Image (cartoon, rainbow over all chains, first blue to last red; front, side, top):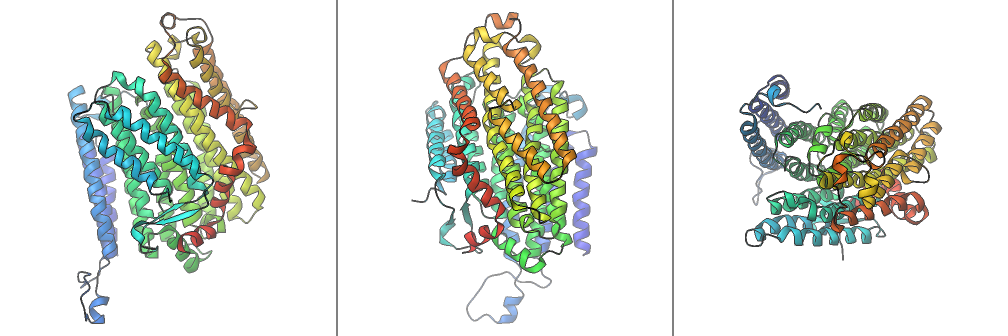
Length: 115
Length: 510
């Protein structure tokens, strides 16, 4: 239970960073932290204490089969990491372009649109 | 032959081939993208008559394998997405000439179409997430395509908020998986109904709330709307048309419908469904009120349209939400059917007239160089075709009988009254008049009124730009007058598919 709690704490930290920081690079870091908190959450779902890699071999005893960790969340996390990388590179590219336009990373200076 | 996988494969392949050929052949996008979207639009129209079908990817049957499910609801969205994509691409051919990097534009556009088609056809929660990310990433880049200060800021804002939505969705999907041990939507639905029945599982309630927030952000429901009024006006006009016309619906409204009706079993009165239905209605009413009020004060043509999108999405959500609440509380099926039909009808209507209006705003901007309504006026003389289509679009969206927006709003309001929500019906009615008010303002300031300096020099846009407008205007009028022709073919199957959760489970799991 504690790990789930810590995972949510990490998520909240990312959200705090996103909301409270004015520097857009720090906002990007906040998103990345949130993303990784959720990846961690998925890994924890599939985790088993004393688990082994889920690779089936012939004449495997049932006790080993029962110790298999759930491979599906790991596959999900792999996909999610790749997506996160794509999004992050787009965010960083936009940060660089915004810096070229305004000469600053400060969102309160950049922000002209009213929302 | 089964067309279902092609809806994703064709645009995905095009998105790959266009930039590759673009290295040697600068016009690859301008040739391939219209061809592909035309094929997709024809396929979507062909698909309407087809019975609901399931395609097993790689021959693996669900729940182990990944399934693509095409039922009435998917077909409805496929029509909207692919037809709007086709006309937007045709409009882009001339309109986008002023930009550079066109092969990238067409590639991203096709990627966005592939993502949206994938979302509406996927039968698997995680696949919905992946396709949603494909469509979203493409749309973030397209919003910032102009790379001016304003576009970049809007794109960045959209990107940040969109990423928060994605994080929430992934969290919700993980939670659903932890509870049910499956990701196939039909399998999850069966598991939930067998294990929990009408009791409420707190983990699923959390997941539902996260889904509603995540998809609500993509659909720009108030209070998650902050990105839309910046992002939609900043994008190039064809992209605005796509974003307002279909992206917020396929990534937001459709996903909410699918997840809550078919996975969480709102329609069969599963645990917590009344809470979800109430939340949908609350977001819908907030969107109608705030979207309407904020639209009145806008002088930027595209910004007004963007705020109006928030309000109109509220109407769609109201129809769906009232239907969900009636079903969840065990009310009359006919009332729920009417409410959902109204919501879905407004969905395709809004796809038609909002993309028409955004494209026309692009035409106006192309001809006059501005979208500030104070500097516009008297376009009926210099740009007769564009003016006529703007008139038809505004009449439709403002809900003037006998145009399409009138019927769908009327159905939603009647269903809300029948369901006993008199106050909400009154609000919806009052804000239908507010919609009328700000579209009268659009007509007065853009089409009629005195001719301004900028408009004097304006000429009618070239045929490649006004033909898409005419197509969409005809579609708008058709939706208003020809319900008997298309209603039974595309709307009623969608309504029935949405209302029968058990049928969906049977369809996918056999």
